[in-house]
Length: 364
Image 1 (cartoon, rainbow, N blue to C red):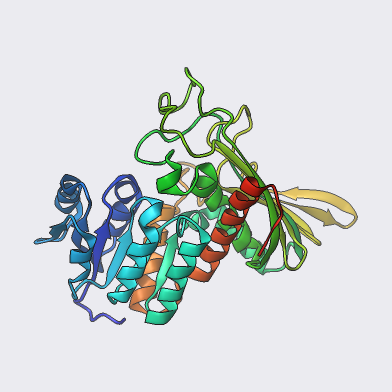
Image 2 (tube, helix red, strand yellow):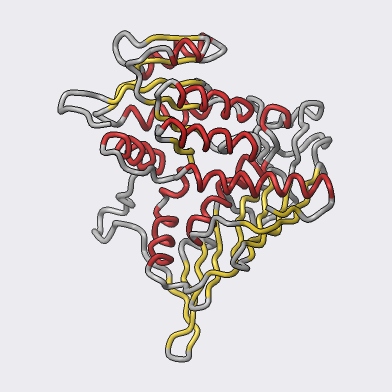
């Protein structure tokens, strides 16, 4: 798609809840070459508010997403609904001739994610998934180091997304049926995406996984967002996986919304290669051996350096994500997050859940 100097990319938002308001719509609003022209939500009042806050003049409001997709003037759709509906809404949007940005995870499971990937290939439309953590300064720096060969062959990595007491109590986050799972598919997915991306390795061989409902029934929880509803908390509270890739590399994936752990970290990765290692445990750290001596280097990712200015000077990852996505559409380039990459994440997540249920190794 190429737009003229005065043309704007026309966007429809499907799902006007938390993630649309926290990330997608504010980021798109900063871009001069886009306009949000349609908003859809099963709670129509949310779509009306979104249209008022973010919409172009005359923006339309829908309760049924299929009606929105009938508008042939819409170029792009952002799918910001619960996980259970990612797949069929995305497929319908691609079939309707729209490019699609779908919020993470790609789908409720790998089977549904494959339908999205196949639809993108079949229609020739662009599909990307909202893994905005790739756009953080620390992630972009580690990726540059990996591409420069600093780490050599990365054969071990840890994908970490651990919270002490931060179970999301709004929406349907804790509902396994609607989300497909808990922290593994919610925040573990970000850590795994970062890890696979920096490793540039998307071919899993097998995995073993465990999930826990250890704290679901707790009362007086000390949770960051107040006590969860024990009757509605059907997703796991923690999940862990051991993944072996086709080239022999090993990944340990740790995820939890509620764990008796002090050292909590979310959406970070540690990579260990034949030449050096890198992590996000205290800013970005690169470790290795130089001239026979061990070293740790900590690159300064701040754009400071002026005595009276201490700001980082970097853009918010959500804004970078939106800019990159729209640029891919306007200039007909591959999106920053490829659907094939997101599908590999979904494969591994589904494998960990399956292994936990069956007690068996899951081969891909």
